[in-house]
Length: 245
Image 1 (cartoon, one colour):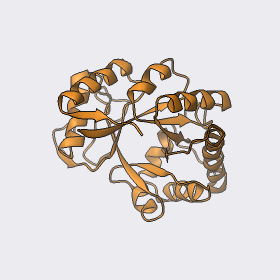
Image 2 (tube, helix red, strand yellow):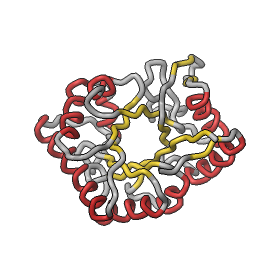
Image 3 (cartoon, one colour):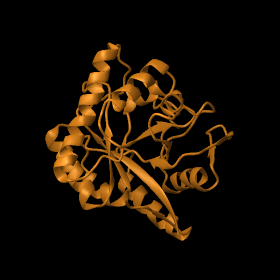
Image 4 (spheres, helix red, strand yellow):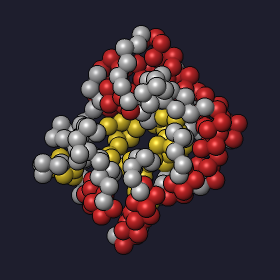
């Protein structure tokens, strides 16, 4: 039986973390930049531990007001410190629990900026290299940060289960009506194509090569719990399971 890694951004104040965690294999826990505090980090990490889920840190621009979804003009040293502090805060909670961080995945605008801005990508990589930890970095497909991080940090390419793609591998803007995929069967077909056929079918119908090894479903996508339950059923029919650590 093949295994697929499905990840989800959690610890962001949503109401369904306890329902989502058993259905995924990796989680990205907000660690204070765009959302989250010590209490929510500990709660999410405990949930991940109980469900044998890979634990990842989800650092952001330090911008809770905009939920980390807007690019920030911030000094490199300040951004580096913020990223480092966010990851370490979750790492310390993990150590107290006797577990290790599996990965780091930047959030929102920081993730998107690192996909195309070498300076931002370099800041993220340098921040993580200053942290004592053996973890991977989730990166977008065909991104600048994947090139900057190569040979420095183990990288894992990420595809998006519930988002449509443009022909340059960027995600369709959330300002457009076709940005988010909410139909269960459509989500399955989208992920299955990326996982099994190694292809992304863009909204315009163009086919892009795909080498993703983990696939994100956003916790705030409508009916995310039901979509994940459906994915379990459909993957099982294809002799694929959502893996555990």
